[in-house]
Image (cartoon, rainbow over all chains, first blue to last red; front, side, top):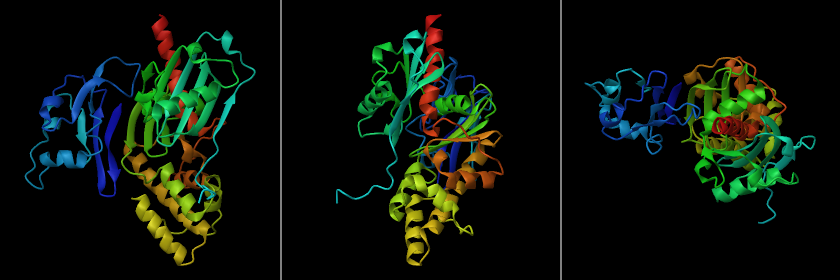
Length: 95
Length: 290
C-alpha cells in the first residue's frame, strides 16, 4: 500500500508517501527524524494485517510543510535523514 | 431569527429490512461512522445489510455514536448486547463507547465501496463533510494506495453547505441547478472555500444568476479533487462515496475531467464507511471465534 500522509492546501502539496509493502517495520526512520514525524505500529489502514509498519504520526500530518522545513534548505540540500535511513527505500517526499 | 431556513440541512433518515430476522443470524456486526458532519450506523447480519441510520453529528461524539446505533436498531427489537462485534470509524472513531475496535475510515471506505459498487471498483473518492480521501483498492477492497486531505475544506461537503446557504438553494437541488447552465462558466477559486465564497459574492453583485455561480463552484470543486486523484493514479472502475456523491453537479464534472464514468449504486453513498466497518466487524468476529 502506498500511504500518502500529509495535505494539499493553497500553498502546495505536502505528502510523505510510505510504501508499506517495502517497509519492514524496522523503525530506523523513527530516531532518524529530528522532529519525531514517524512512528511504527499496526497498520491503521489494514486492520486484518498484524505486521508493524511505519507511519506519520497524527500530530505531524497536518504541519509537514513546517516540520520538514528544517531538513529542506533552499540550496545545498543534503539527503533527507528519513529517506537516507530507510534501507528498503520505502519513504518518499512529494515536495 | 429562529425561523431562518437552513438550506444546508439534508434529510436524516433510517431504514431496516423487515423481511430479515436478526435472531436467526449467526453473526450480527455493526459499523458506526462518526464523521465531522454526519454520523451513520450500519447493522449487518452475516454480511448482509439489515439496518442503517444517517444523521447529523452533534458536538458530543460518544452521544452521536449512541444516537446513531439506537436509531438504526429502532423498531427491530434489537439491543446493543445483541451485536457481536462493533467497529467505530471516522473522525470520532476513538469516541465510540461500545466499539470493539476502531478502524480508519480509509480502510472502511475501501471495504464498504467494494460491497456497494462491486469488486470491479479500483478507485474510490470519498468526499466527506470536512475531508476528501482518494483510495485505490484491489478486488477484495483492500487498500493499495490512499491520500487524505483533511486540512482544507475545499472539495468537501462543508464547502458545498456554505454555497447552499449563500445562495439560498436547498442542498439537494445544488447539483441539478448547477447543470442547468447553457455554457460552463470559469470556475471560482479551487484552493479555498473562503476565497471561493468571496469570489462568488462578487459574481452575484455583477449579476450572475445562481445557477451560473453554482456551476462555477461545482467545477472548482471537481477540479480540486481531480488533482488529488491524480497523485494516486486513477484506475477504473471509479466510484464516489460520501455526501457529495449525491451531488450530480460535482459528480458529472469530475467524470468529465477524468474521462471516466462513476459507478452508480442503489445504496446510499453516505453509508459506505459504516458499511465497511460492519464488514470488518464480521471478519474480526469470525477471527475471534476461531
